[in-house]
Length: 290
Image (cartoon, rainbow, N blue to C red; front, side, top):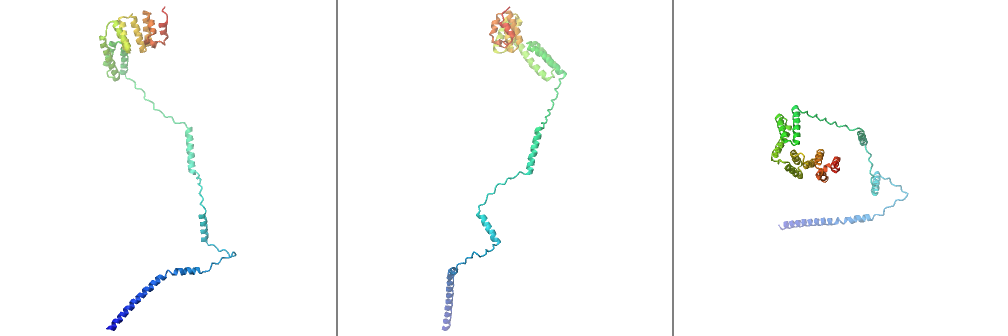
């Protein structure tokens, strides 16, 4: 038994020693690997200097690859030149289009512009027989209204409305003037009856600028007293303000004939200013009485 144990122990110790020895050799081998590099350096350093080629030696032929590489190196060494901008010539199609447009513009400039034919307006509508008759009746009644004969104008406007009420435009105007005539007739009943009161009322209306009303008052006063020079003079001033130059000169002539000293008053009266450019006014006012 003792011999077997000793044999086993020896075997185990030898195995462990072998393992240790193999591990040490592995470590030495790892450490010895980097030391091989300087040996290679020494070997290269031990080589002799390279022989120089003699000048008589023929130049070696360059391969195609060496040519291309040398050219590329030269091209890389030289600075790259900037490419000049190429002048782009206009295309033939664009030139032809420009010429065509120029020709068309020249032709249009020479040609006269077409005249626009304006549509002819339709002919005016001819009035019917009733419309023309209503217009004639309206003009007749309106003349009486302008003269101040409101009773006569009222009667004629009433007749017109009875006959031609279907003529709407003329009938509407006739109703307006009929209402004015009736209102004037109502005011006439309230007016004074004597000539002096009517003259005073006319002077008031003249100073207020109501020339139509003033003319009516003076005309009413003359109906009561036709030979009153001051009433003719007031009527002349009122007609001058209304722009009735001929009628104003007639009234002034009548006033000067009845009372010659009214010439001095007429020379400085502002109401007679519209008559001063007329030669008949100078003859009436500034000439000496015969």
